[in-house]
Image (tube, rainbow, N blue to C red; front, side, top):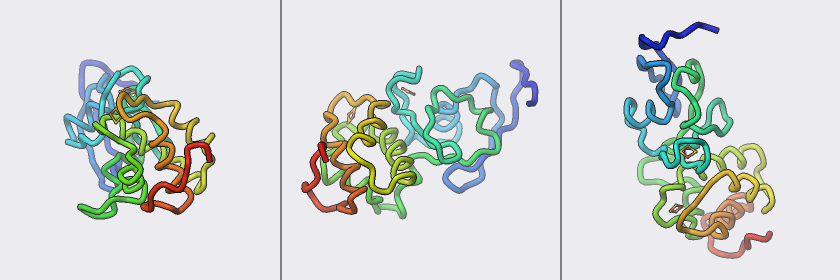
Length: 173
Ligand code: FES
Ligand code: FES
């Protein structure tokens, strides 16, 4: 493992949503700050900045991770996905995004990007998750305004192939 020194910047190169990106950073720089302030990828939100709220969740090599608990230098050589990767084309929602819209899975939207990145990883692993699996994933996220039932309903609708249809899946399914 290379030894990094605090008094100089280090080159970090990785792929962000399929594009090669790079930057010179101090070893202490958080991935969340690198994404938002240096790369302009502001879809990743920052709430608590200590690993509790889940707002900053991204995928690193396919696995959900807290960008506020990850140093930018740690993702050198990795494949990152952020919420910006979900939409298949400008102005087009992915099935997961559409399900959140249809099932009222968001209000202010502050928590939504992180939740979607966790659900996206779950749905890649398990195309039809149970309510228990969805709630387990959601337990790593805080939402201050929507209430969790509609968020669970949205994820279950995608797993059931129902998105973007409305309303036939209950949170207890
Ligand atoms: Fe990262 Fe809250 S901002 S978990
Ligand atoms: Fe506002 Fe979740 S929709 S915090």
